[in-house]
Image (cartoon, rainbow, N blue to C red; front, top):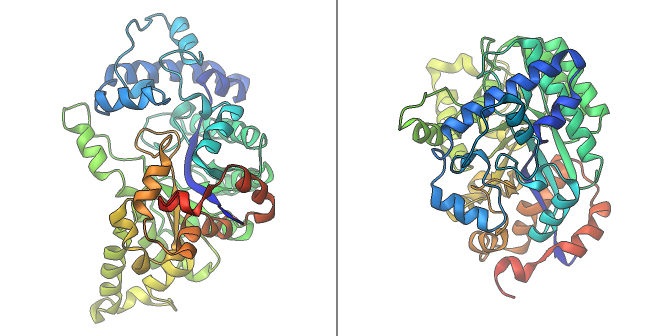
Length: 412
């Protein structure tokens, strides 16, 4: 095709809180409502402390949502009913970007960025489900129902345009038999993007433990890629430097899944299992592989590699990919050492730290001078293979809204 097929490996979607309540079983709706009210009050107290206000204002002027990351609402209601109404009002200060829950608006936003298809990760979900799992003290059954409500909503959302929206299902790891069942149901619901592996396992063992073997088995069987996405961190409290600590370490935690699956032999037993690291940077993998190779080659740690037929680097090259969200120039320069076939570009729509709605200038900066085959691989073709997408079905969309090679290279 003449245009560039761009598949964003990192986008986000989420319903208004009132919509999620409708997807909960009746007996959990009042508890879900109370959870959202409590969450909103906490976020109101922290509003204006996450991103620099000038940057938030600039993003808002370009069409983004101020939401809870900007300055505090001028007159936040104290009444619970009024607050819940505000949370469910798409015009309120608490509403996310309309494209996060409105499929028609989302299609327009994707078109404007030249994105033909996307992998969808969550926003905050009822009962603390989502990227921040195992951080809040909530009942395990409530967490599970929050997950199920999100997966049902996401399934319905993706069905509005199944060729373009690849939903990533939420899971928790409290009961692995239940988790396996949830993964099968997610596949049946059409969530083709795979599953989000919680970055923290809470009180449970980490992913090197044999208890997760059924999880690896079902994901390989169903070709459901595992995703480890930044978002979780320890709770650093409300002191002035807490956000700086969070931002400094947030992309470190999701990387921990890699050595766990290498040393435990999960990749050895499941050669077709896929693990994608999303919005966690990309250059880090080179130092991680250097360190793991050093350990593997050290005679005093010879037992580390017992039963393993490949080296850590070889497992990465066979089983792993990186969702290189808004890949900067310096990380792109490492692409040959990382593996061009391992990298997938992501816009992080609609987050302020992502590239939307100004993706093209960032593409031109990063991909200046790239050979066409490398550019096409990172922007779309690698994702075609990871998610087993039908190129023929995407081709008309690409030809309609895609960017030209000259556009991306800044030659137009």
